[in-house]
Length: 475
Ligand SMILES: Nc1ncnc2c1ncn2[C@@H]1O[C@H](COP(=O)(O)OP(=O)(O)O[C@H]2O[C@H](CO)[C@@H](O)[C@H](O)[C@H]2O)[C@@H](O)[C@H]1O
Image (cartoon, rainbow, N blue to C red; front, side, top):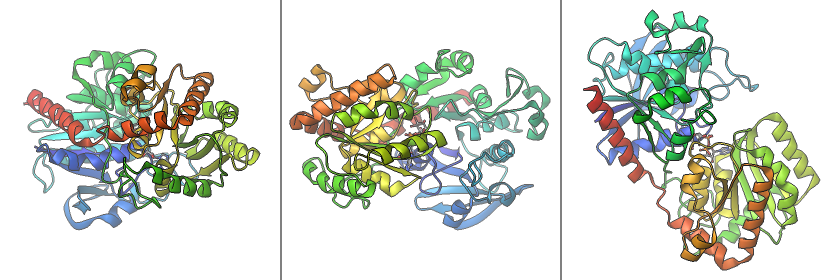
C-alpha cells in the first residue's frame, strides 16, 4: 500500500514537539507492515537543505513540488518561498507571534496534498492520504471534492487543543465548493475549522492513545468537538505512540557521556553528574527531577512551581528545560535564582540536552492537565528515568503506578497521581522520594520501565490495520 502522509513538522528536519517525532518515525515502522510512506512537508529552509536526489514532480501557482529523500525518509517538499521560506519556527515569527497567514499557508499544503494523492503530479496516485493535525486537516476535505476515483483518508489527532479555527471570510480563498461551508463540512461555529473539517471528512480517525480517544468524546475533554467525535465514534481508533528506539537508546546515545543498559544502571551516575553540571546543581540526598516540556497550561507546569517547596523539602532537585509562556519562564528563572544549586533552568529547545536529562536524571515530571499520548514519559521509561505523571490520556495508558500490588509483582514503572492538582502532584513527589530512598524498589521500577516494549513495530501494525479498513471502506 502506498500512503501519502502530510504534516507540518518531521524529525529530524523540523521539530517543535511530539508531532515531529511521530511523523519522522512512523514511515520506517510502517514499511515492515507493507506500507510505503511518502511524506509531504512544507519547503522550510531546513527541509529544502536536507533534500537529496531532488526531482520536480509538478507545480502549482504558489510554487513547485519536489520529490527526494532525506536519510531514510521519502519526501515531497512544497517549495513555495512566499509561504514557507521564513525565519522562526514553522508557525511563528521570530518574535513568537503566529504568522498572520497561517490559514492560507496550511490550506495550500492540504490542497497540494490532495493533488499529489489523487495522481495530479508526476507521482502515481496514492492508495491513501494520512493527514496529521489541524495543519493538514483540510486535506480530507479537498479529497472529498477532488475529481476522479476517491482516495480515502485517515486523520491523526495529536492534540485536539490546536484546532486551526479561522473566520468565515477565509472560505472563498480555500477553493472548496460552496456546499462545503456547512455543519456537515468545514464550517465550525460560524467560521472555518481545519481540524473539524478533517474530523468530518476523513474515513478513519486515529488518536494517539485509547484513553484520549475516550476523553475527547466527553464535553469535558472534547474542546467543543465532542459532539462530532461522538457521532464518528465507530471510526476512531486510539493507538499509543511508540518511540524511535534507534534514536532513543541509552546503549548507543551519543548525547550521553556514559552509555548504559538495564544491567549497568549504576553508570547513570556519570550522566547525573553531567546534568548537574549543565544546570549548575549541587549534590543532594533526594531524587533529581527533570522536566522537558513546552511551558504551557496543558503541561501543568504551574503545578510544579506550586509543589516546588515540597520537592525541595524532600531533598529533591529540579532541572527544567523548556520554552513557552513568558510568565512560566519567568517564574522558573526566579525559582532558580532563589534556590541556587537546587533548581536549574534552561529556557530554550535543546534536543541533545533533553537526551542527557533522560539519561542522567532520576525521575521525569509530567503533570499534564490533559495529554493525548505524551512522549517524554516514554523516553523516561526507556532510559530508567522514572516517570511521575498525572493519570490522564496517554500517561494513564503507558505508566504502571507503583501501588503496593504492582511493586510486589515487579511491574510498577512509575508514579501516577490524580486529580491534577498541586497537592496531588506534591504527594506523588513525596512517594517518589520515599521509593528513591529504598534503592531496590527504585531500581526495580527502572528495570521494569526499561523492559517495556515502546517500539513502533507493534503499533505500526495497528496503524496499517486502520489504513486497510479505510481503503476497504473507500473502495
Ligand atoms: N525545550 C525542549 N528541548 C528539547 N526537546 C523538547 C523541549 N520541549 C519539548 N521537547 C521534546 O518535544 C517532544 C514533546 O512531545 P510530547 O509528546 O511530550 O508533547 P507535545 O505536546 O509536543 O505533542 C503532542 O503530540 C504528541 C505526539 O503524538 C503527543 O504525544 C502529545 O500528547 C501531544 O500533546 C518530546 O520529544 C520532547 O522531548
